Image 1 (tube, rainbow, N blue to C red):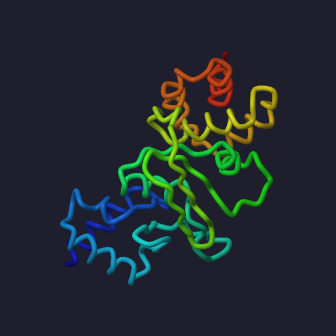
Image 2 (cartoon, helix red, strand yellow):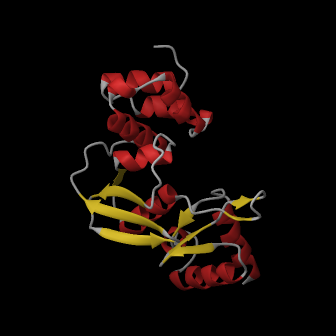
Image 3 (cartoon, rainbow, N blue to C red):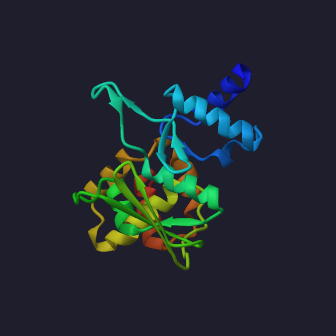
Length: 202
């Protein structure tokens, strides 16, 4: 059990702090029984955290607060998407909140999906999925979808230097090149803004 335990923990931790997942994400390496048993052991040892029924995360820890921080809602949403084989698209207002472009206190994050209407409590934060026709689901990277949906929610007229700087704060520069390639088919003004965000001359 020890070698399997270590293998499971290395697999989970290898995705980085904040990664959310279900037992299904372990099935490529373990049987269903093994996955369930290993998750129970890791949970008991405090290596992982249950954030909702059937969903866990490898929590980020704040040295300043000396405690685990709140779950990454986008990671949780994508864990559900993998679990149920959904395609998902974050709603614009929720994208604004995730990128710090809205000062509104958020108790609910909304995603559109091609599956079913579902609502989950994620340690005090509501995650809602609404079944809908998805229009901008062709992006490979979550950062691409997040930026595009936020820009669409703001509108061209509200894009300022401060908006661009705020988005940059929340996007890893290592993703810039990937995002640029991923969003080439976006509306012209959105792609021109993305080039500014990714520090490429237009």
